[in-house]
Length: 169
Length: 191
Image (tube, rainbow over all chains, first blue to last red; front, side, top):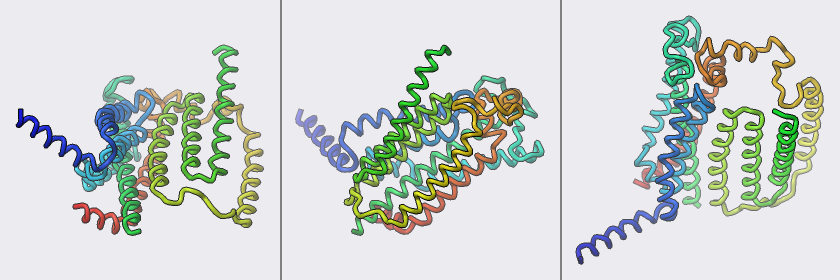
């Protein structure tokens, strides 16, 4: 009984020490549930961009906004642990690299830049299925990675900068 | 779609248009920065609904998502500032210049809108050999994408998307380089 009370006391202390950063417990709990749905929705928008409305740009912005939600609710350090700046900029560069590689492969295999070689040469998949449209889903994934990572990076940079000026003042 | 439905849709459309114009005027004229930003958000959500009425769900999704993200940044930037009220008079020279520019844009707009279709009618109804006609006829067969917008922006007009990616890449490089020194100092302090 005493042990349990002690344990709960320790847990409470930890919670309050965590609670100093970010917003209130209500916001934190709800955003930790909602973030999963937002990420799933973003991935769906990116992957099904060639079948339904949406695509790489919209899905990427949704993915970035899920991390912005975490940043607002839990504070900057929490997001830093989850998605370090180095990894973020690597994702950004990987998206650009994938997109340009698709373009260059089109040039090498089809003769023109951005040639849809997977569809026109090998005719992969059926229309109206997830695996279809050749390079378009791959481009969507590349654009989604690129947009998501770079938008989050811009927002993170801006918020860090803003806080720094307030410290100096 | 029946006649009545079209009339109701157009009525809603004009109400939305009026709402956006009023919000834009308030956003310019109000002295409080926070209410100005909220009015900008209202304009953005109105624009998103408008794209839905024009049957452009791709643009509607992008508009609403970007609007939410931009609004969050603007509100955060505004709340933390001490000075949220605009003070001082408008400059005479700037006002004259902006009135002249708006008048020129208005004249050009009168010329341009005279040549356009009725509102909501696609351009290929007037020009039979427009490029969009080709995309609609051959898009599914040549690219295999069910969403015609995806087949245009990532296959027929992939250069545009490459340019957009370049713009984002350049902007993130610029932001990183300009803000780097202070941001790094802060990160070291946090560690």
